[in-house]
Image 1 (cartoon, rainbow, N blue to C red):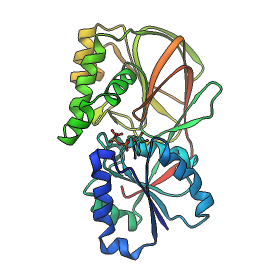
Image 2 (image 1 turned 180 degrees about the vertical axis):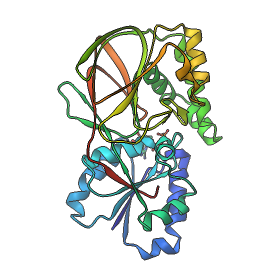
Image 3 (image 1 turned 135 degrees about the vertical axis):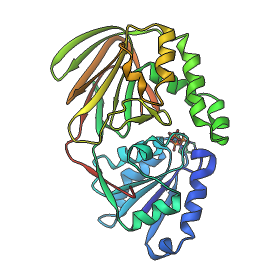
Image 4 (image 1 turned 90 degrees about the vertical axis):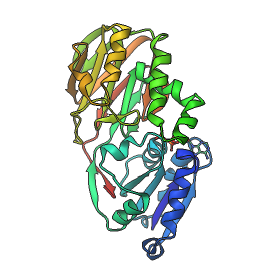
Length: 304
Ligand SMILES: Nc1ncnc2c1ncn2[C@@H]1O[C@H](COP(=O)(O)OP(=O)(O)OP(=O)(O)O)[C@@H](O)[C@H]1O
């Protein structure tokens, strides 16, 4: 059985329209399926958590139609996904689809899903002290990018610009707003057992593939792989140069700035005496300390 989890408000109703088109195709009529429409924040995670109980051993694939936020919830609800997962992008960012090479119109992607074209994908994992570990689908970022994500998520312009298919502009507006209020952080980082003190740090970002924030190539060489993840640091930089970094991030040329550093890790621990804002797959929170690792076992992504 194919399980569809659709966020009806993602992409201002685009996800609902996509499901409606898919449900009228011949291929859809040939399969056994059940569709859930999400009703509130966290609902997709709850639905996914109940699937093994409600449909034991009969799920062929879980198809998410929505944005990266809904996919993040479903992957976390499935916990350690043993059933194949698919994503039909209909949100404002859609970075997972870019990173995983899921191309085409919703009906075309659905046709690839029923043909069972699949690809291996390795999730990241993050854990705050005293909390349960959770999955990272696309990226986790500490500092400046988290504050931008928070400003954009809370704004009225996100919806408006997403309506006009100008979602990328939301992040530019968010960036300019946050640039003048952001205070760089003093952090302690432990990368594979080696300790670093980072002062004046703007951001630390870990990505599973190059894309975030609606198509920015934050870590251009990030590859889908087991065990290892790339880390990007931006520190000791002037506000004006930060603007320069973000003006070049869509082409991936920002990595040429001397204040932008890249490394690879198996395990990274980040901590600070002050609260660190962070974003994971576009959803924001704060922490004092967090450990990031990467899974060794792959999940299967269908439709890529
Ligand atoms: N019916 C609903 N009403 C309000 N919020 C919902 C509903 N269903 C899901 N959500 C929440 O909406 C948030 C955003 O959804 P999603 O990421 O799918 O779309 P988006 O914001 O348009 O896309 P993107 O994340 O790619 O920018 C998710 O965190 C999800 O929990």
